[in-house]
Image (tube, helix red, strand yellow):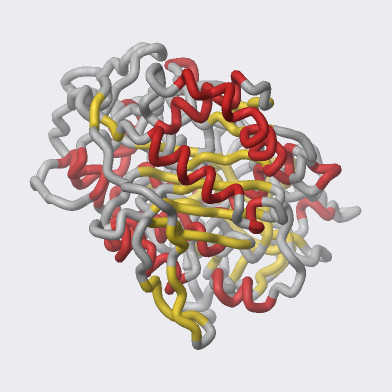
Length: 507
């Protein structure tokens, strides 16, 4: 149920050489991957955290966790016990041994203490993978339920509380003043208790230590043990939700019917994930293929004209597929789904895509219109230009494209890759652009981003809308499961700051 807590300490001198990533204006393609410069002597949580922070899972076997070379680097990317993940906590058990509780703000409907990175924050009690879960009785260290040996620790001379390896020191001794409720007091801290920074009980607020206020009681210091709410699965949530989610998304893919993409999309449909979690969806190919059954009906892809095969070339040795996708956009033009939804999304089958995250991003950007800008807009997912695994644009942008697409005929020779051509065409026809570099995380520094998360875990734990590539059912759903464990308290805004040394190469 819980996640793992870790104290993010100072950078350790565990590596023999620091990796210097390519400059921000250098494209590190799949054929020009950044070389592995570290050789880890050991694999433990702190060493792996530091390695992921500075290098990441750049090697294909590490990205996919497909071939175990028995190296410590592989372990850092692929063994869950070595990740500095978020966790549940447990105070030493008494009569309630084995029982788990959330630490809930007294008088609130659903506000609980949870752990986010190296801090504790207030968040929704239903955020089951972030929330702080306690096994509470008496006085002692607040130990992690899922990671024994790690505990909550007060910082001497500071208001901060952070996770750290358990010890018998006085900085890790806490108690609830009334046993199962009251203030969470640092037992040896000279009248200091868990409180909300700023004093206002709002989700996302950071927890700190402040002087205990016994009377009058401060709401921000009053907690109680509560039974954790059960987390609903995606299917349960969708089935019980009778209100249409906004903004509406029409999501689509081109499927190469002779490849692994068929099996991928069949499993996506079966589990209602990826494009099949959008408002409406369509899969295109040049041959009809059964994708599976739903509500007693056999579902098939739509058929488009022409060959889907193309040559590969360019610096990155990618598909020279502009002609194929120009026919694809023409096919979408006559699909009524394109015009009755707010946004159109093209996702490659090997892209692990979360429509709910995209909706959240769009909703926070256009709050007054529920995520629908009402004008022509496309989202740029890479500082080097649009990358094809996930392409997002408003239906108004699609309308401008079809009215003015003849202006883009002369771009084909200069932009033989469909993503580069589409971005150039949008620019030439005057469609508005918004940078959103947290739309897509790719391997091997494709946009100068580090293939790991901001909190020093493997890539699929990053706060991104999608991840690419994952070309097998096993690796695709492995990434999906990892990403599904992550929630965050703050609004999910589009990030326009490109990856650089200043932000440790994370969007």
